[in-house]
Image (cartoon, rainbow, N blue to C red; front, side):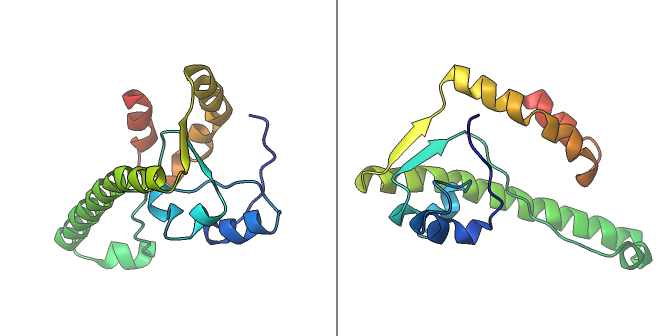
Length: 145
């Protein structure tokens, strides 16, 4: 894609752009204004992808000691939380885009040719992270494409 990746925390993007360590960063619409990235990044390159995860990390021993019905209740609550977070993140896109228009921050969407390059460059990530998510999740995501 022509960029040299630099590992950096999301919360460091504003300072890193300001002091010249990076030219831009991977972020989300929800965090663009909240983390003051608008103060140093006059363009959003909208790759039309997002990843919001509601992570609930539980030790296997603890989890296996829980009653089956409680495990099910926790799974349902986790899915409800994830769906709610996803809805909010989608709503944030329109809110942030409207504010960008007011603040003369340009939002650029990838051309079809660039999108194909992006997809090809990131294809290996599906296999790399497949076992990190619940069984079949990445397969379902691929089927939506």
